[in-house]
Every structure is written in C-alpha cells, then in structure tokens.
Image 1 (tube, rainbow, N blue to C red):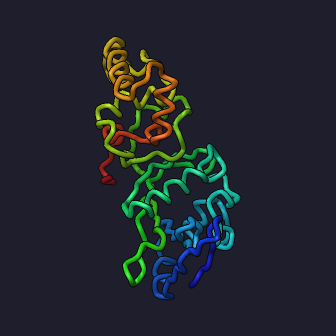
Image 2 (tube, rainbow, N blue to C red):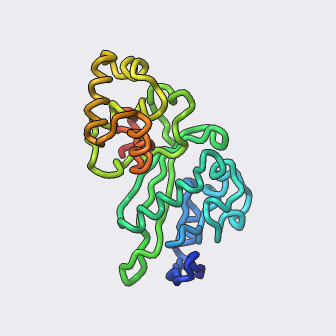
Length: 236
C-alpha cells in the first residue's frame, strides 16, 4: 500500500509504504490498530479500529484526517483536532505518547491509546502507529462533573510542573472549587489555597483564569496524574 499526500503548504509528505505481510498481520488483530503519515492522515486501519469509530468500512477512515471522519468519536469536544496535535507531538519528538480516552457519547468504556513513531527502511520517521486496548479496571474519583476532556494525556507535557503539582491542580483545572478539590485529596481547604498560590507564583500570574490559560496552552489541562489511575491489567 502506498499513499501519497501533500500538506497544506504544498511541501511533499514522504510516501509511506506498508508491505502486504504487515497489512495481513494487522488485519488479524482484534484490538484497534492504525497507521498515519506525517500529515496525520490514516493510511491504514484494521476493522477493529473502524468499529471503534462506529463505522462500517475502512474507506470511511483511510486517507482522512480525524477531523474529516464522520464519527461521534472525533466530533465531540474537538477531539479530532486534539488527536492531530498529539500526532504532531509524536512525530516531531519521535517519542511515544499514551492517552486515556473517555468518549461516553461514542464508546461505552474508557480505553488506552498508545502512539509511537513509524520509521521507514532508512530509519526516518515517516508517520506514526497507534493501537488501543480497553481499560478494564479504573478508579478515577468520579469523572469530574462531566468537564473532563475526552482525550487525557498519560505522559506529562514537560517538566515545568512536578507530579505533585499536577495532582493538586488537576481537579481545579477540571472545574472543581478549592473546597471540592480539598475533599478529593483529603486536604484542608487552606492547604489547597496555599498550594495554588505557590503555583500561581511559579507561573507568574495572580488569578486562576490566567493560570488556566497557561495550563491549556501547555496541555496540562489534559494531563492525568499517574496516581489517579489504578489497574492490575495495564502498565503506563
């Protein structure tokens, strides 16, 4: 299979070739698998991935960006755009990215997606491979007021905030008050208030709205701290 595409600025996107042997192998997997090129267009999906989209044919997906696919999975909460941003991070950094996907309007269960760089025979990154599996056991303390994004990062965006910073600010970024956050973390309200003030100073802002804007720009509003997920079946 060879798919030739061109990016919006007309620069050439490298051809991405899949052998018949690879296609045959991926077609047999019961878990969803897909491969995208550097433009973030699907050049391969198996039928399990098609079913995850709630569609019937590979042709409904192959050759398209997520934002072009007619599926509840990609149309809710700008998920299609978020998937493309994640793809670019994987191909630009040539590093793995894992996300927790929660899309109750499209899929009845949460699931993990892993995205990894895809290399050609010359060891050049020419796209990415993605595969998913169901999250069979999860214990995130309520799915926060329905405000939680559909695609949550399981890799911290960068090292600006510590893991402990992220644990405290997570619920505030999902729309909970200091009081509600304190209850979730078994802390006093004053402790949460003081901690948030320290985070404001770290970012050099004075108000939560400005702090929120900073976190959204960095992608921290989508980061799920590791201790909020507990499972015997999956390791992140």
